Length: 555
Image (tube, rainbow, N blue to C red; front, side, top):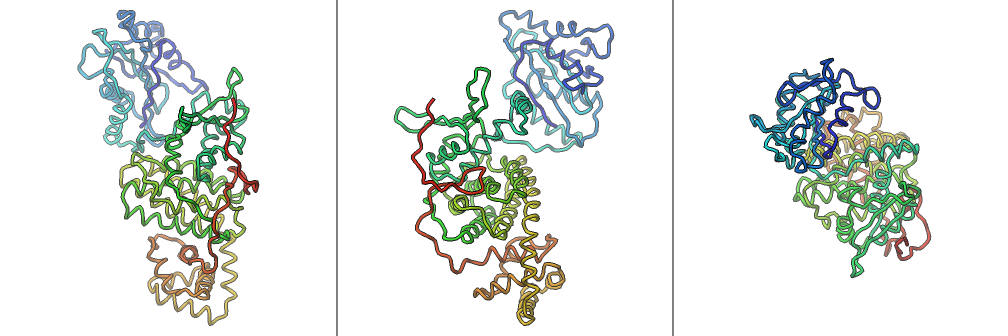
């Protein structure tokens, strides 16, 4: 059950016109009162002799009496909506809920004869609207500070008592949602996402790639977006704002969004904190080593979440969001929708009230920035390795948030895992087929050696593994590891104990990708430094022109 409290209004009659009207799409049916301050308020929905004017006049009585002392925004409007899967509540139940919320918020404390006047209107099965005028009988304003938090706390108790769905609660760290005006503008211009949402994606991807704030602003401008940087008199950066080219207001000026209005963790101080904590990033000579190091760094995240302090855990989860923001840029076109959706829904999980100790997540952050400085991987198996590690890390993040009662973040991680799993399965099909073919061509003596290793190392699971269609892919992976000098028994033991295996539907596939991550690169060695030019967010390949010093856009 969710409460939404709007900004204080000035026209009681205007709100009532909407509530008792047909709605924007004729969605309002049978509008009527379910409760009021005294139980005798005129009901234009059920009483043919009652009018909206009479109801507005009754609600505004004390506002008129208070005269100039009445607040300019005297209309308090709160909607309360049940979850789609909840049963339909009766009018009496909604009336009780309205009174409890009004009591909790301080608008109409129970038993207070001077409480504000109010009505609860129902015009749909799943929600009600409460309208109150913020002048008490003693002509003083109500004590309704923090009314949303107090209403939300009361709804938690109501959900439990009424057997309704427990809605995950946020912690006031969520990114601001697009306004109705922004959504309508997006529809008029034929875009599926608002300017705020598109800019949020651009800046997030740029943060994943950048190593300095100057580089960050340069990357954003390369996407075609506008950047305006503000400075202190000392010359230090104070903040920034961004706008989409061509997105203007009625005066023809760009519609600007500061970083903090895109998301709390995209404010300039938050971004600078992350970039400052990132040490100089070194490059790898080949894409194989770069992507394998990413998979290895991400693969360590679940252990760090279970063993480290909360500030360290939050830092590693923040890097997971950066990795998810980077992948849609590099992945094949067929995987991008799922990966973009995974990054979008994971966003709430990337932050919480726990401050992140970003210097503890340098290895993973460096790996993310490194892959963005190379062309998209030609070897699809490298992407699968990264997706496999990310999926396990996101599941671990879900558990980490849930154990700390971060309900909104836990649900976000759960939804992201669904999209990641779909992308992983789609990406793994071709690579797994190639590995299966290699395994099917193994000489019998090599195959027998790997069969013996599985039976010796995983005796309880060997029968299932050897009977699975993807066993040849695992056999090929074990054989390649053996040829490279690894102990197949040691790798199998490590892979099987690394995370829960009893819930996997396809043990061979799970072990195949885990083994590929666990195999250390044997031949590649790092080069002195990585190229400084980052990948273009929204492009599949990085620009090759050398970087230039960032110059703020002239206005």
